[in-house]
Image (cartoon, rainbow, N blue to C red; front, top):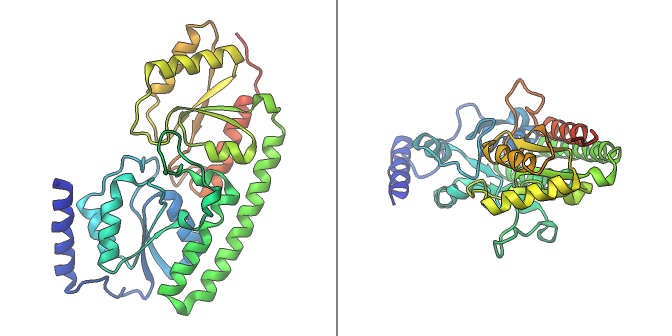
Length: 312
């Protein structure tokens, strides 16, 4: 209730400050856009180009599952002409905010809405809910370009051709990226393609590129790893001598540390293969500052670590 009250008060202030019930016309002439995650912001920026003024709510390494909008965020959202978010309940604590923005005339776009529903993965244990981490299948993620292109073209028809051309070029880039991932993974023997991570964010990656994926907790990082789950996964790692497991940049490493200790207690030393980017891009000066960079960084980290023969 306190969260809803804050939303109502902040929205009222935003409307009063703008002297109206909807987004003000931008003085720059560019479309005012807000994206929730860094992954969505990269997508919107590639298609919007210089015709949009873009702000990302969440910075590098921020976990969208747990993110709660501040009063400043609500102000930014209410001042935008369009808000792009991932969808599929990834931004689980922002649902009411999106609904209120939509009622106030701000265009809200869930980019995952352009992915054909039969191609989405159902979340285990959550009836009717899809796994939101669809960006890890590059070919699947390319569908989202159409959502951004169409929304921006409707808001700004004078630049519709530019949005269309940028979207088409980006889809071609993603097709090339998808081919690169498949070639890189093909060098890894099938029996080595077992990916153990902090939370279950890589199901789409596993399905698309032939990996068995084991997440210590479910699709949301709000969950905690049960002791029984740690022990069961440790037994599998030791028995199959999986050479490496991975932490994630936006998730606490505590559960993976506990898992490594449980594996060691079984007489096998599993390596820490490195840090993967799961729900957010890396910092601007990192190789994972863009979506394509994130995918390449993850694939290199995974394949390099799993190619090493297990010892101990």
